[in-house]
Image 1 (tube, one colour):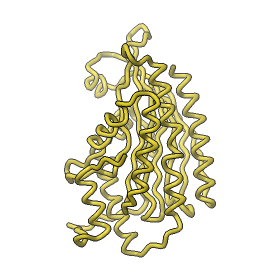
Image 2: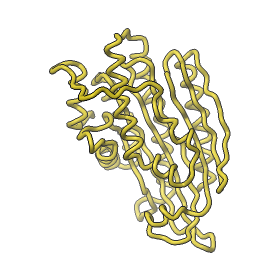
Image 3: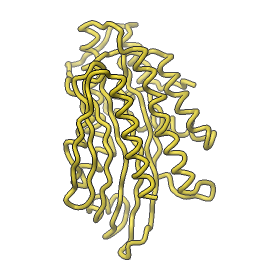
Image 4: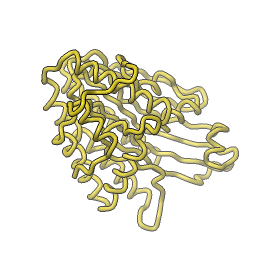
Length: 300
């Protein structure tokens, strides 16, 4: 399964980066191959200073070795080895009317002293962070997510949408990072779902990403915007940074397993503002976004 899924994410990385270059029309992804001293490595692809994308990355990795002590404690095991692979992407557009997007699809195996698999699971999801709210965009993104889920189980979308709302939440700010999407983790073999079933589900979601995001980009990328709207985008990007550095499990896992810092922190935007006690005007477009972030909605 690990070879099968790693092969899948390599092809998906190619598909996604090719399409995003086409959408941008100027910038190209720069590729960086890296290795991890303890075992494994990855292929980082970053796009910067484009017509559409100010900064973004579409990265894959496959790492293995002895599970670090901190992770052993987390999983309640001793002297375990692990394998983890996944694709992680974040895109920060120039235009404040185009939302930031994040997605990740991953697979994890854990082994005993004899090298036998003692546990394995899939995880992942995709979520949208708009700076200005267009309800048709939110509905489109969530509808694509729901369609991908419904192919496998009608309970998946409401379940994983709720988990996304709960996970991508800045508890110290009492607000969501964005308008959500899907988040699932520890998807293990059960009587109802084999690992092949989970593979089919996760790859279906992965294959839906471009359909979920690109039409939104195409609708909004040429809209004119003001300096004030750009400032708002950068202030809200600060909340994105806060989540990634304080709460994000993927970031923390990478830091605890001696991951590659440049790849882990690729998700951070290049231009960000922290303005003291910034409160938007009542009933403004900016306030409308905050209202939704404080009270998650059902979009489909």
